Image (cartoon, rainbow, N blue to C red; front, side, top):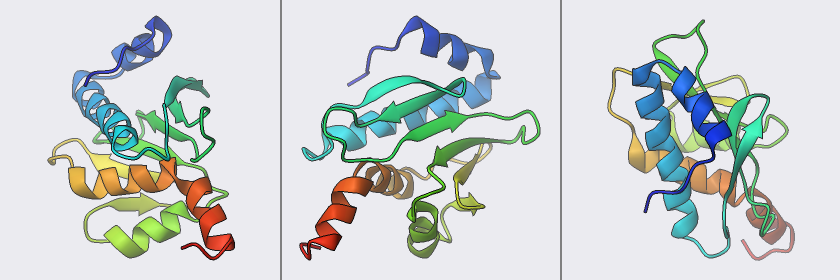
Length: 143
């Protein structure tokens, strides 16, 4: 199901080059698909943070913020930013090292010229959208 997008967020997507915009809109849809597949995530709020589309689990508080971006200095890719204060990128590198390119402790870089690695990416997005929920479960011995 396609999610309604605000004029403010749409204007940011519209400012990206067409190839980047298409890839980022696919990733945006995967975020909403991941949330729809897991009741613990709840509704995802779409907003702007640092001028970029951002996705939060305000309703449940289950996850960590996901931001989407495109940078002129890396024109052949788009970025999925995760909170650098989490273990998400470290965990993603362990689980999906051959499928996803992770840089530093905050970004998944998605090449524009390659097909979207949907299965790996939806797994990573779900991990981010459930980060706090899963951390609490681990701390209480439930995971």
